[in-house]
Image (cartoon, rainbow over all chains, first blue to last red):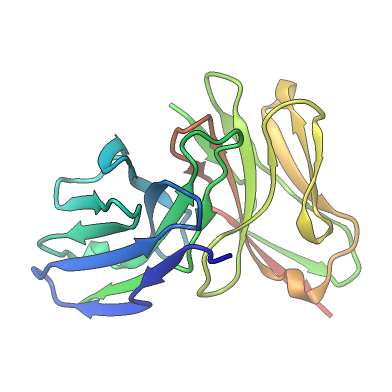
Length: 114
Length: 112
């Protein structure tokens, strides 16, 4: 049973550039949430996708956008990168109609902005 | 707004000693509460969760947590810590499909 997978593992970008991170949910899950974890802090919610629509959004600027595909995988796009966007980006999957709404996390993508 | 406070940034215990990590939450309704563990450079692994019912919940790796509504707390405990338990521990609160709100974490160091 495949868990949540994310790619790439690490990424180095320059200020002002754009980046795309990818996530495949756990088998059987249909909902994907993205979190940003800055160094030494807890994860912060960015947004959640279900049925290819953004369902919830945290306090992040419009530079952060996402997409969900028919196979439930998801992308996180960040435009006009800032140094402060350097963080571990975590994807979590869950089942929208599930009883427990447990979120299963992937290993993350480490983004460094120079 | 919901929030989670983990008062201890860093805790050091000796191997074999007992452990308690504190978590206090603020939430307007009945919360779903979670404890996650994160090893260096890794994602988050769910240790245990509370939704309803018995306020003492058992998790993986010998961990347990007790939900105390009157104190708005959900402390994590383990009777005997192993060196492999050294990691960062996060308490989180949510409800239903709502996004999780995490605390800032407690780093556990285990001395031999």
